[in-house]
Image 1 (cartoon, rainbow, N blue to C red):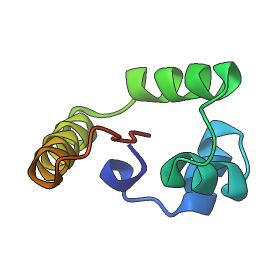
Image 2: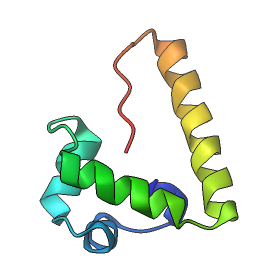
Image 3: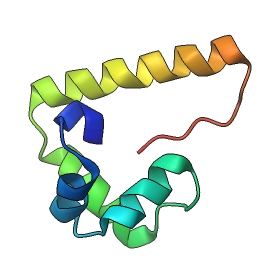
Image 4: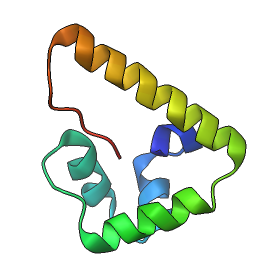
Length: 78
């Protein structure tokens, strides 16, 4: 979602009310998204413009294709 919104990790974290290290850990797969983080992500997704949603869905498709091509079943989505 962060890439689709064209935000850096610091700005995305500020938007969600979490720290930059938290966003980095999510993206690296080093931490699971907490219930608070999931609620913030869900709320942001509901409030996101249609063009950003389209970019987000496109990025998810690209990620799924890359995971499939490399044979890894461990995809991380934030």
